[in-house]
Image 1 (tube, rainbow, N blue to C red):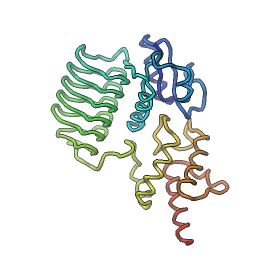
Image 2: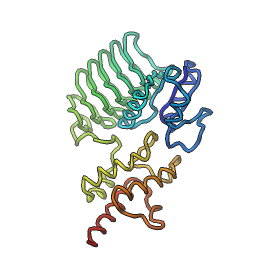
Image 3: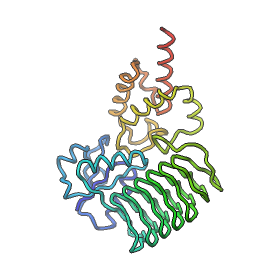
Length: 308
């Protein structure tokens, strides 16, 4: 059986190593609509449509190699709608109780422990040395960070993000689309779509509607001047140009390794269309990150309003 890894970034490379060590797969193929090369780690890289044309659902199993839960969900649904079935990728050092359940499309990395009668859902990502206690349940599309600890009989909802080193007490519930920050110690239930930080953990805000990796405080201060409707539309256009790419779209720079000039040009074109603005001359070169682009769009909109 061939393993298809959706995402040809850093996580894809790591997952490929796990696949090689397991000896379970006859080959590996990457799926990435924005990859800059046709080969990665000695394996072919296909765009989604090209992958569908070459590989039948019965000859492959897939795992999403993207860190952001929102994009993991979208990629998983895209593959399942096309008729493909998720595989289970498990590192040889992981310990999974014989009576535990692990859903399709889930990746279990180095040193992970999954206890007796625990249930891990579909399309989850359990980072190095994460621990899921006995009788616990981890919802679909959820990510556990490095060294995250989930106590026994604890329930985590779907599409949640548990940060590195977070500690979840036994017999609590962490809501869907919630974020538990790095190092947080959680003693009480966490509502749906909430973010908790600290020890003891306290609610610090809403869960991310679109992405876990939200802008830092400095970026937020600069972006607060943009109306919510502009920010929402900008996010939709921006992330739509980088679907399936394994990097944080909020904090990356166009000078980072792996950025795609084609996607950059596509972004400029789509921003012009969406906001009825124009990037002239070398202005596009100033769009170096998510934040700079949003500020440029807002400035252009304000200039247009001022000229009316």
